[in-house]
Amino acid sequence: MEIAELTSASLPFGQAAELIIIGVATLDRAGSSELSFLDNSAYRKALETSRAGACFVSPADAHLVPTGTIALIVAHPYAAFAKAAMALYPEAAFPSPVFGRSGIFPGATIHAEARLESGISLDPGVVIGPGVEIGEGSTIGANTVIGPYVRIGRNCHIASNVTIIHSFIGNDVIIHSGVSLGQDGFGFAIGRDGHSKVPQIGRVIVQDKVELGAQVTVDRGGVRDTIIGEGSKIDNMVHIAHNVVIGRHCLIAAQTGIAGSTEIGDFCIFGGQVGLTGHIKIGRGTQIAGGSSVISDLAPGSKVGGYPARPIKQWFREVAVLARLAQTSRGGKKESSIDSRMNGTELDDE
Image 1: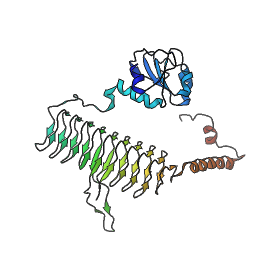
Image 2 (image 1 turned 90 degrees about the vertical axis):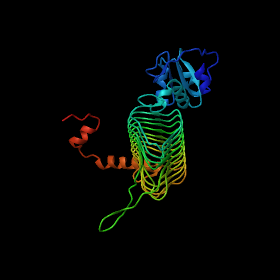
Image 3 (image 1 turned 60 degrees about the horizontal axis):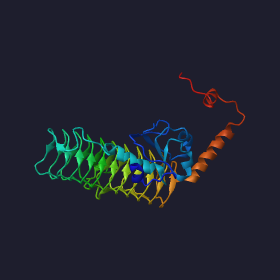
Image 4 (image 1 turned 60 degrees about the vertical axis):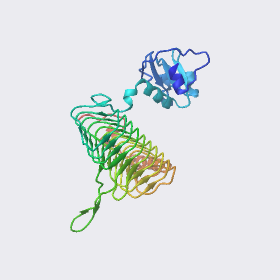
């Protein structure tokens, strides 16, 4: 079975592996020709009643796979599922040009001093400025603007309505719609008579295999470069300010804001709507819970949450204590009409 070989999955002794897989689906929706996975114990009951043709499971959950479903036993089911799904849906790996994957289509404007390697796809409305260099196999969607002297590596995929200026982009980078790279950072010298703009003269450096979600904004450096490290994945609507340095293989979820000159180590993970003040250092492997505000340095391996962020266990204890205090303070007092409506009853639409 090709999927088993691709993912190095093993099968229970004696189980047949001949099945044609035509798609993927969740456990509760998968049919007999579809592939699914179990990576969370909360969905074990869904596996027991699933009609999936095959399912990635850990060794501990292999006994739950129902008769008629091929058990694909792996150490990390979700990672194996991702690899198999990529093989089944290669076109979903990156944003594809509207007009196809190769060729320069009418309506694209390319400056005479730009240098483009072979196998590049440019949609109508693309503007390529002077001195731009774009590597082989890269694709650029409609109405995207690539400013003067920008460098874009090989096999990059850039969606529509993207603006890239003052930037160097590595190989195998994915940039989704509406991203803006290289605009001025928010740099002003504050004064009683007004605020003087500080010239922004740095660049944005995006290293290999980075993915930037829709509407991400990355400011150019003020006096040094803003850097996004190799393999990092940035979710939609994240703002990265000037002089920020993000390490390798970081995961940053949506609506996070990172203020200027912050340095982030490798393999950090941020939940959604995290805010980081400027000029701080976040150590390698740090994890920050969604909605947290970080105002000081964090040591490598920290796990924090809250406003302001503090060690995650301390934050959990504080939340629990506050909940008990609120319960105790109410004591035997009669609940107000609002309290009673919100305690176990649904609010009316009044």
